[in-house]
Amino acid sequence: MPLLIGLVECLRPRRPNDFNAARQAIHALCFLLSENEAYRVGLRRAVMHLVMGRKQVSLYADTGIFPNNGFFTEVSHRFFRHAILPDIVDLNCLRDAVATVFHRSSDHIWVNGVGVDVWGELLHAMRFEARPGALIENATLRQMSEALRVLSYRVAAIGLDPEFLRLEPSLEQPSSPFMEQNVCTLAYLEQLEAASRAGASGVAGHKAEAVIEAFDQCRAYGERIHARVARGRHEPVPDVAIAQTRTTHCPLAQPDTRSIRRCGLP
Image 1 (cartoon, rainbow, N blue to C red):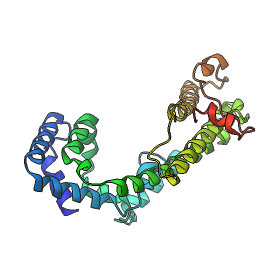
Image 2 (image 1 turned 90 degrees about the horizontal axis):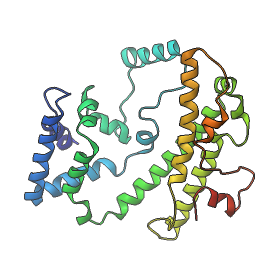
Image 3 (image 1 turned 180 degrees about the vertical axis):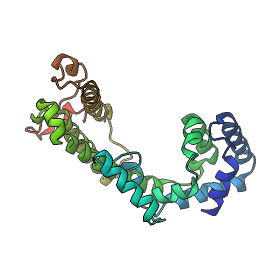
Image 4 (image 1 turned 90 degrees about the vertical axis):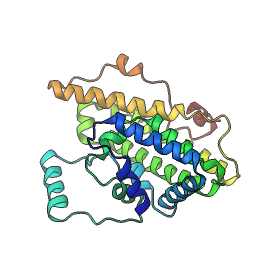
C-alpha cells in the first residue's frame, strides 16, 4: 500500500480541478509502464495485493449511498461520527483501503474529472492479461454479485417506504418496479452462479439490459416523486408517463422459466 499511496501523491494535481495536469501525469505513467517491465509488474502486483483478500462488498454497495434518515438526524450522526468519535479504519475492507490511498478530501474531484477512459488506459498499460487472472476475477465477480444483491434489496425496501407509498399509492401493487427489479436481479444472479458452478466464464445469451431497465424504472419513479415534493404537490404520477419507462416485467407470481425469459434471461 505505501507504493500506491506514493504513486497517487505523484499523480495528484496541485489544484484538484486541474484535470489536464492529472491526465498528463497518468499518461506519463502509462508510458513508463509500457517501456519498463519491472515497473509494470511491480504496480500490477501492488494493485492485485490491494484488491485480493479484502472485503469488497461495502465499496460497491455503500459508497455514495446515504441512509434514509431525516436531515437533522443524519447531520447530528455525521458530526458525532466524524468530529467526536471517527470511524475505525479497517484495512481488511477495500473501501477503507482505497480511502487510505486517496486520502485527501478533494481527491474525488480530479479522479472523476480525468474521465473513465484515462483510467482505462492505465489499467490497460498494466497488462493484467499477462498474468493468469482467473483467481482475482472470480473473487471480484462473487463480491460484486453479492453487492448487487444487497443493492437490489435496498431498492426494494425504498419502494416499501411509508412516505413513498403515501406519495405514490400505486407502489403497493405487486407489479411495483421496485419489486420487479428485485425479481429480475435475483434471476440474473442465479444464472451467473449456475454458470460459475458449471465452470463457464459467463451466461450465454444473457441480457443484463433487463436489470438496468428495471432499475431505470425505479429511478423514473423516484425522480418524479422528488420533483413533486419539491413543487409541494402530491398528485399521483401519470400512468402514461411511467408506462414509457416500462419495458421489463418480472411477475412475482410466476417463478418458472417464462418469467425468467421476461427478464431477458435464457
